Image 1 (cartoon, helix red, strand yellow):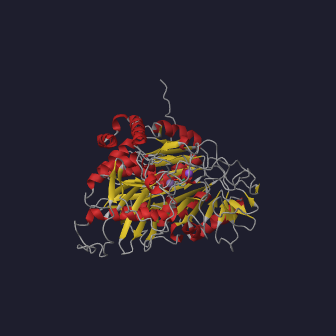
Image 2: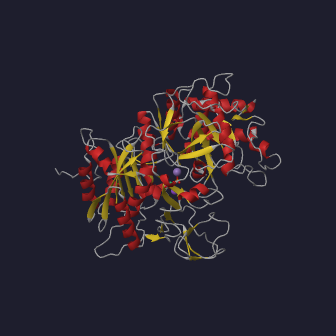
Image 3: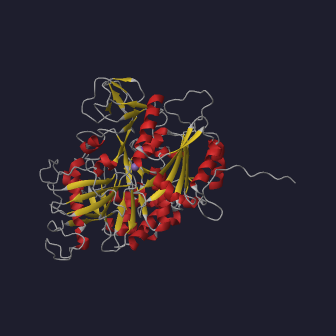
Length: 634
Ligand code: PEP
Ligand code: MN
Ligand code: NA
């Protein structure tokens, strides 16, 4: 009888008695497998950032920009094959296939661990392994979570400094038993002795693997943001969404802002948009509505928990912005332009002759000569974009001139409105208020958008993107809808957020945008936020709020009126303030037009879409779809 040795597999932090392995033991097990030349424990200090930055400049990974133009800033050019998230190589490795659901690539965890073992064995040869302890959210905060990323990419370490809170304090907490998410990243490009490195090492063999039950992440082959900065999409969305489901909270692909009315009342809004649909623009909204101000809290991810007062409280778990550069300009998002004026890492933008950066949409006129994102000469009209369409800036949130003084409040801010958006040329109104929490969940479940450049795929195709979480939900999407219904039910029905759907992108029959967008979106924001006064304002109340306990500021006049349509409540005639807007003749009516035939087709497509989830679609959502059809036929 022969005894076969078990196939080698990835190390884990989960011990057989269910406790988590001490960080040091896990790190050395990973090092034994990946075989780095040396191990560096990171502390998040300015010194560390300076040292690694200098190293990357010497290696050609970073090009320093002219400090007189853009102090403390650098340009990275990725390998041309490594420019976006790779959804086809992103895996959810839950024990049951049905728990990953039809929208995720699934692999059986033990099988994936064996497969990956073979891929990553020796992957760090000739390289330094960095151990990066980080916190998502303020260190030790009640909504925050800890992680440790192991990586062989100094670009990742420096980016993690910006995007998360890297600190020794995290290790201290972990040493005292605090749970952490272990995340391993390698560029997958070992160096033979004497082999010269390249500026952007990566590998054609890519895996972005998540193990939701053991809360582990393994990523190999890519140095690009969403694939490699594991605190972001991998942890803060995919793993955190499964943690939230187990623990009664939400990890969402949402921006968070505070809008303050002319009367001084603070409202907080969380909004989900598919990638590259203007989330960063809304996060940095410059209101054109007189007297309103908007502060930025987060631009990409919100972690939201029911608070002791029955309200939903949100934090931005990140510490920086990893924003799309093209389309960001002085006329479209001046706040973002000011944010990236210094201490910013740019990836895959173009370089100007005087040592600054440029990308499509930054200015109306392109410079006469550039070096493009691939390092080649570029002139206007040469037929190639100067920046990659998914070029990015990585910058500390604290540098944003509109950052809220409370953006790091550990207990989060109370959310008044949840907004679902998408990029739709037709059908979806400029704004619609859900009839109920359940109807709002249907709005979230049916978000769809025209495909953008943020992921591989054909630009322009209509893509279903429920909750803007299609690539980011770490479990069965239909279970996510049920989880939203459950969280809604756990909140105080009088104080939970109201839910809305928006669409800035509706076009007329000649293909022209009907709505100016950008700062003018504050008109829509005003309407929907004032609608949320309905929840707490007593019938017939004046402009002074009688119960001044948590906000002594006066109301700003009557709640704006709404008119019901089959798809939700839209502003009544005159209720949306369009004073001074030069809208085309009939544009307003067209922005809110509900075409019953077209919506019946939408409802059919939704039913088809639901079919892919079988019996996991919550009954409440099927009821909401039936109710929608019923309203359409009246
Ligand atoms: C990313 O790809 O890292 C990222 C932030 O994604 P997106 O902008 O598509 O949400
Ligand atoms: Mn995003
Ligand atoms: Na992306």
